[in-house]
Amino acid sequence: MNRKIIFLDIDGTFIGMGQTEPPVSAVEAVRRARENGHLVYLCTGRNYGMLSPMLQYGFDGVIANAGGYILCGEELIYNCPMEEELRERTVRILGEHGVARMLEGLDAAYVDPSVSDFMEREAPEGGSSELKRWKEAMAQEMNLRPIAEYAGEPLYKIVIMCQDGEQMMRAYEPLQEDFLLCLQDFTKNGFANGELINRRFDKGQAVRRVCGHLGVAVADTFGFGDSMNDKEMIETAGVGLCMADGNAKLREIADDICPPAVEDGLYKMFEKYGLI
Image (cartoon, rainbow, N blue to C red):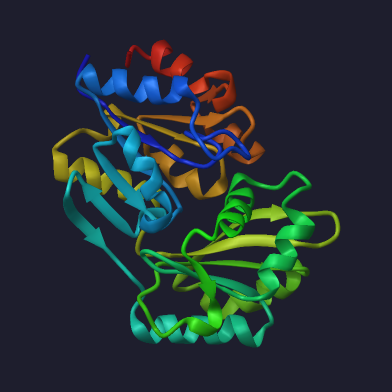
């Protein structure tokens, strides 16, 4: 088999839904795939500071901030924070519309006070792996700081949430030329949660950038994810796989369905496709 590149989302994929550590089987699958000559990359919406605990499990590279920051080994091949004018305008518009914001830099995120209230109300009732990831990050104080401390550091993306989906769309209207709105959650009581991702990158573009840098055909890639910020990766990879407990719309477009991480899903699919 030709050398393949495997791209793994973290939350809900490498780590099971609502979990904080990967299953032993997932770690073993990554180890054995690399021993067989394949490359394994993390491909996550997390910023680099929040994904760093995962590096102990051994990866060949990292795609962070939903594609805005890419490391191939130790080599930085892509780095695309928002331009200053765009950053200032976006933060201002969201604030004017009363949308709660989590401003994601490279190593830290800056959080509106109302975000914790949303987490307490919404995260326990189902919700996406992204929402659960943020709740866990807040519980562990993983480089999360009050938004009052934000002093203009480079930003890569912004997590947004509010109790009124229409309110979110009104805030997004003047920003849509520059950002993709990746919606993660809508609940019966009106809560909406999503991410503003710079149109200059996404996880799919990141897959192509890594392949171009390494000289590997995009057809020789696998992409594993579970939420809507994985959509472009799933569509781009040679084989796109959605976790069985992942987003229903994402399952519809995936090439195959992977059992949940907590059911040794990654290991089973690595075996199925001859990666281990």
